[in-house]
Amino acid sequence: MSDQEDRKVILDTVSKYYDYTSYENGEDTVTLRVPEFHLQPEQNFIKLSRELDKLGYLSFTSTGDVDEIIVMHKPVRKTKTDSRIKLVLLATTIAFALYYGYQYQVSYKGTGDFLGNLATSLLFYMLPLAVILAGREAAKYVAMKKNGMQYPLPIFIPNPLGIGSMGMINSPNRPYVSKRAMIESGGYSIIAGFFISLIFLIIGSLTTYNFPPSAPIVNSQVQTVGSPLVLQFIANPLIPSNGILDPLALAGWAGIVITAFNALPLGFLDGGLISSALFGRRSIYLSYLSLVVIIALSVIYTPWIILAVFALLVGLKGPQPLNNITGIRMNTKAIAMVAFAIIILGLAPFPLHTSTNSFNVGVSQQYFLLYNGGQNSVSFNISVNNTGQSTIVPAFEISPTVGYNMSGESRSIAPGGQVNYSLKIDPPYNMPLGFSSYQLTVYSGNYFSTVDLSIFKVNTSSLMEFNNYNPFTMKPDQNGSISLALTSNEPEDIHIVSIGGPNISFSYYLENKLSKITYNSNLAYLLLSPTPSSTFTIVPGNATIINLSLNSSPQYWYIVAFNQNYTAAIAQYET
Image (cartoon, rainbow, N blue to C red; front, side, top):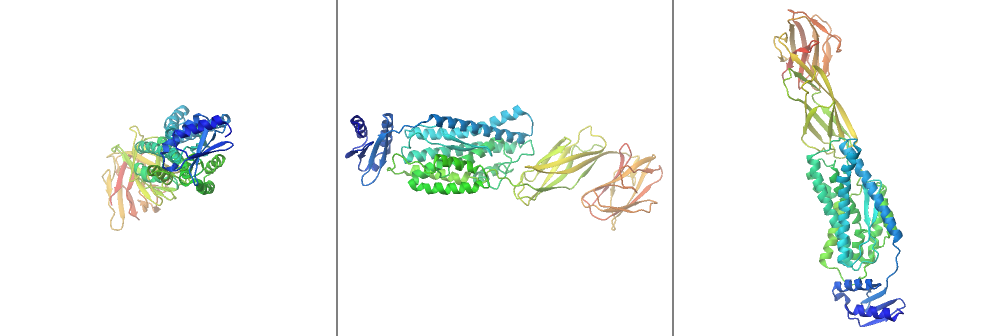
């Protein structure tokens, strides 16, 4: 270094911290030989580096036959344009994350309230995600300040095709002062991001469990083949739904995935800082390997390529510390081990890859007979059989709207599994007599299936009876034959209807009628012309004989004769 004043300042400053044996004056540098530098406290170099930085110099180490400290003028960096680009990327990331959170909130709640959905998505997705990212950067800020470095605004990586962000890359204005600084900067960030995300995931998972989504058509982002291991081992016991997450839990899940992305040993990513500190220049091979894996995965999950592009722009070659001589202590290595473990716990190769759902819905009692308003609720047994390749979480909706309760053996159904549910409908107090039809729709993701349900409401009367009883209990003989005698005290135009369970099969004929009809349906009108508009007239004092032959063993079976006012005589089957 040609300027004697510069050389004197450098020598005097270095002598405060190290006993150098000699120095060599180069054109732009001063090289000081410091025997056994690696035995000196690491904090000495941090203080030296910080003091020289304030004076406008950059110091770094070199090892060979003798350990050396090399000092030069700090290079001038233009950061104005870089800062503008970083701010644009930050704004873009915020916009994409807000859009994604809003869209998920709309599907989760199923309402068209724009301001309500926007406010909720801001509060329960955008804000927690911002806390996670800010927590990561706060941890990095602490690590860098601890090691005498200035914290730079990170480069945000927007994700327009997924959860809004792929994380951040830090490219400091000056090199990292030590290997410890690199491991702490990357490790603190990864660990803080992971555990803050985990807190939101657990709280949101409990919310999901206790307050399931009101919208049944959520296309769950974690109902996937590539859920992070932490979700499988920690979240699943909390949410048997194994899928449809509350927006708060979704923010935690997104934070875990983003943090795991940034733990990859690639360039200037947090994991890249750690691998460079541990393996030095050989860490470039881990960067190459990570890049190849990311590009391969981007064929299936496109947003991975975004991370690869930004990593290439910043550089695959990780930074080297100013002090590359001092070794790494065990406590610092432990931080690195925990950080790399998070890759395994949180990385999802296909984070938003959803499988197509498929299932069948069955109902054992499609028609329910309600007479004299005696029951407070009407029960239907529903079965859902998962025929798809991923676990499903069925959600239920009844139209027209009516009070109901659905209970089942499990909230989630594994591939190939079947779960039985009990649906209890609370009939409105003013439910009209006759047939009331409902449609039950079962959803999971974007797949749905519907079944029709009916409640037949009548009133019984002693004026019209089967075999002098109302209701009358039918007991078939050994041949499966049943004989009913229908009587009425008044002339009546009536319908006679059969309501039976699955797989019911029976034959019947009316007295003095030669035609015999066999039915295999849950609902059948027992007249010569089996249509709802057909009627039959009974005469007071004369019994109308109905002979039935049961061809199967139904779970339930009713024969109902009713007039236009839905006054009815009922015969019910007893197994």
